[in-house]
Image 1 (cartoon, rainbow, N blue to C red):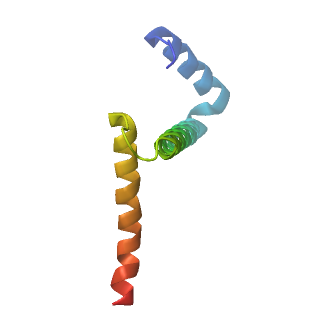
Image 2 (spheres, rainbow, N blue to C red):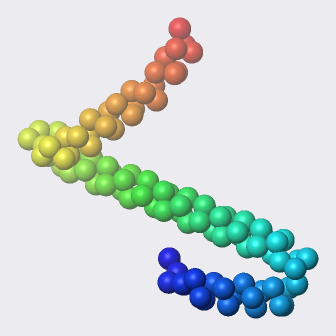
Image 3 (cartoon, rainbow, N blue to C red):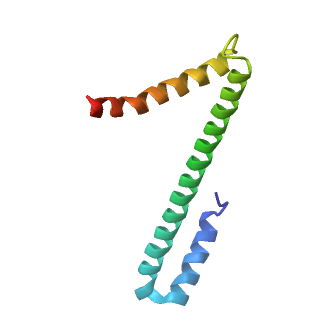
Length: 101
């Protein structure tokens, strides 16, 4: 991520020690590490959300292709997407079928 060597970290540590003092330095380090952790977590969440949206878009496009071909002679990729959508639709309907019985 950052191309910082040991010498650079040592200089940053000495400057932080001089500016903040030995009493406030541990708290500042904890706060900084917590903030970095939160930022990484948000970035991971954002990346996951984008990947999910891209997958949904791909499934939607493949379904349109399948509908245009009247569900006949589909490429393996499109057929797999259609099968995934069918299984997802069935799994959504199953809980409702159990409640109605």
